[in-house]
Image (cartoon, rainbow, N blue to C red):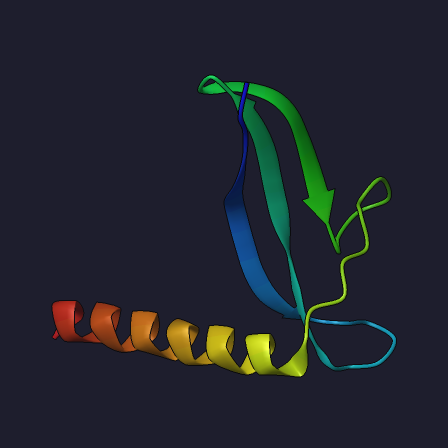
Length: 76
């Protein structure tokens, strides 16, 4: 049976110690469409620490800017 990993929530925040951008969120594992596990990453006490590359963080920040621009267009 195939297991699927699905990112259910993500955000770009700032690491409290280093003051650098940090990607955090939550993912779940699905088997036959059913959730079998959920895990937070890079936030909270029981999270899983996942180091993301600088290249990915730059891409995510660009996407975040595109989302903001799209929302601004809808509001004007």
